[in-house]
Image (cartoon, one colour):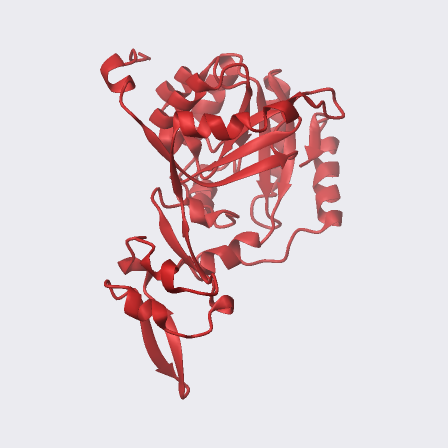
Length: 321
């Protein structure tokens, strides 16, 4: 494997990243109190995704029908025919054709009820670093395990904006960095992050390649390879396990997880990330209605059953996330 040196000419250029959210005071995505940066763009299409607004790399329209009064001002404001008045059952309703939208934001200017928003905002690495430094004092507060906090890069898939991520990490001097990743990116990029990312929150969704393709849109061969690469190079890792009853909670998957944690001592632990359906309503608002699985949220009892199954396999470094 050859890691290319940094091109200093290109490095000096202004690189911008696109985020869809900044979540402050998070305590669920890495140690301590953290600032979560949600990156746009993801190469996977997981059927249980709770952030479907992260799929597309660019800015996009979100429309909340429950807040719309049907004034139709947006129909006149849009020059691309995104918003159209249609008659249905004797009533005039608003139809939205998301495929025509350029995310210009003109319709937001005439919507008095905040039924519309544009998802995605551009930042330079320096601008984002300034946002992070606002919270720096809180990172010193220790959690129950004695750990301090920092920044977590999540999404979406942060690696889908790798040039910007690499630039941002160069700006984050002395701040603990976690990265949540699907592992679906070139190995060379992960090699560049060794020593820059302090803790990888590595999603391990399914062991069988065909199941992974069915559930997530791609097989997991590259993901498995990158996990091994990070483990072999001593990266600090927490294995995150999105589990959905009847889909990926089979015995072979559980045994594979237990084997990985036993084989690689630098995997701190595995965390059960149980299914919830919060992504379904968000998908409806961005033109993705019906594309995600809509099931009942995982019960506390089911989580405990999964935890016991892992422990019965001899896995002690496991918790419910």
